[in-house]
Image (cartoon, rainbow, N blue to C red; front, side):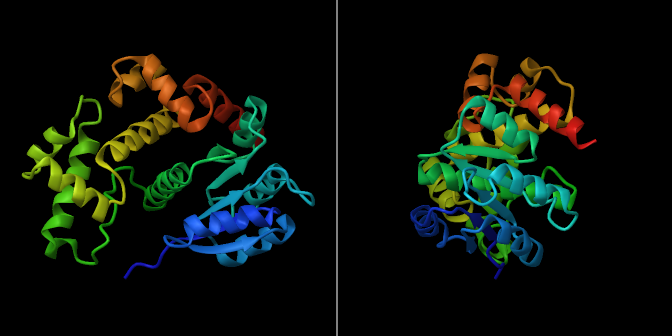
Length: 260
């Protein structure tokens, strides 16, 4: 059985740590600390799959901690997500500039936190493997022996190959040889998301990758990931990342320049 990913959570509000533990512990292994200075040594020793940092901590703020993590060769590849009530546009841009991959505003919904963690864990794994088209592992250790897992894998592959099309759950189910109700159940069991939620996440994560790794115009990226209207893509992207696609690209470029 695959070991659950380890998350490092850094927040000096004990109530916040308790709340995050409740929603994350069923799915992930957790390393918790309220001491941001201690967090660096924990990250070095434990090599978590992802770090969740508060911004407004008393000893060393989250921005400074993120900079330390990104400056250390041992920890620079750990994806950092900020969870903070400090969520102005300036805060978000600064967070991206110091190396974070995402910024989630407090108060936040548990499903939003879980969805964004899944996205960034998947992206980090794709980067580690050197491939952007990996299919998520089914929960079964031998998916080839489980027809349901095989169907879920096939649906994931079909979605990724047809992101630019106007897909419906019924169409996806038909393409992989099942019906809508069964596909919805299989996705919940083997992928851990709804079909529509996975499709939206894939479109936005692919859009983010194209924004940061290519020079494609935003309008072309929107069409490539299935948004016929660039405005709808911009709205969905802003809802997920707190910035417009163009502002995110500019912030990413500025962060790269600051590193060089």
